[in-house]
Image 1 (cartoon, rainbow, N blue to C red):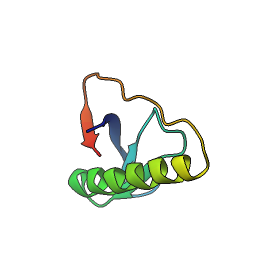
Image 2 (tube, rainbow, N blue to C red):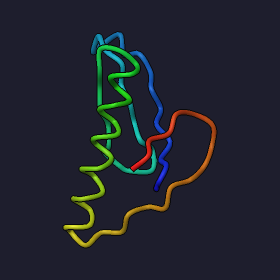
Image 3 (cartoon, one colour):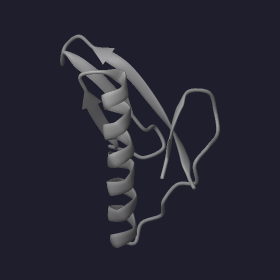
Image 4 (cartoon, rainbow, N blue to C red):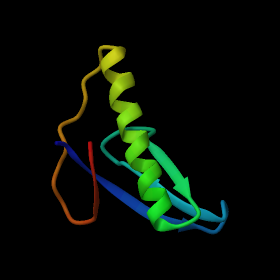
Length: 72
């Protein structure tokens, strides 16, 4: 099981929580709550990895640090 760090913050501009996965460029999600943003981020990670594998691109090895993590 892989664990990627997820940064979640409130975006006043967008009016929702944004979840970003720093190790996976362009892997972002949003939600009305932190829990929803985290759930959407987990789904985005799965799609990001599947697409990278399909395209023959390297999938970064997850790093461990403080914060929320997604298990995929």
